[in-house]
Length: 219
Image (cartoon, rainbow, N blue to C red; front, side, top):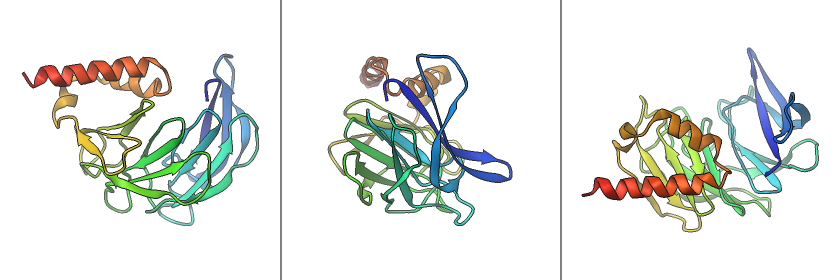
């Protein structure tokens, strides 16, 4: 949300945890317990939020190698997570992007790399729906998004991938590849900044610059 950041589950070797923690971004200080997830899971779950609701899906749990569980919280009110629905494919290490109304869960690991993209609508609970497929199947990808476009960069496939790919979030089945070697010309610090400011208006400016850079490389 614009005011709160949420940390969802994790792993304190060898134990998995249900803990959900939060902090208020305008005030320095330690995180505070928000509540608990429906199941113990490590940090490989993917998550995104609308201004009011945080949704998390997948990850590894002690009971299964990969989980298909989606759960949600209301960011303004501390409490335990509630079941939202299921992913179309159980997987971990996915990247989640989204807009104010819709979340997308792309890629991941099922024992092999996945190219599946699922989506859900924040305002209503239920199982995820197939959105389309990534250009390249990857896990541990680096996701970011604007109000209209979701981007996944790099990842493992099975070695390091340099693919940047995107979808227009309101158009299922529409996905494109920026350029396989495009990432080689971008500073790693830039991509860290993009991910950190994934909910910040600066992202729109940064993504516009990337588009212009893409066009220049064609000439």
